[in-house]
Length: 256
Ligand code: MN
Image (cartoon, rainbow, N blue to C red):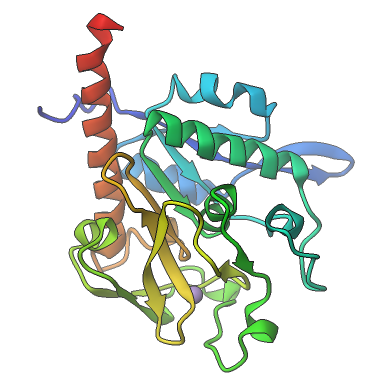
């Protein structure tokens, strides 16, 4: 089936934070997410924290899900006391996004999880995190390089065969790195598919063929206009997965 016409791009939800600014809660999402998704042929819509009871209903009108970056996931959600470096928890955002992960899984809605999003998806599926790479994994690379959002600062080696390797068309790539946490034990149904040279997890994905779900620790939305093709390829693979998924949904629709 051909891709949908360009004037009718698929709708992708991007999770967003709520942040207190001058005493008011404001929706916050780095604009680069919506710009990169537009470049990749989507129409993006921001999804700030809402009542988790709406997650399935919300996603029933959406063609794909992006879980965005942000502050640390509440460590008690994976059974650990907070490390001294942990960000102030945002229970509303955590609960909403965990509900999105379960609803997306149930509908097999294509899902691209980025940075905190990958960590959050891992926790939603029962996995754990390294709470602070510099203190818990000394002798590793500098992964927290927020001043270099658009720079590829370390290598990631990708397992093949994997959904990620197929998406990238490469067995290794060079990525940006804006994180002080990382996936430790993968959640149920997930597997690690890329690591940095120091062993830190850089990507994970759903093991089965039934759900296109990829989580990356780097930020493809900051890199899709670089000379290197990998991040455009990743977003294009996500786009193809969404097209395939919506085509399936419309084939099912007449009997639904
Ligand atoms: Mn990294």
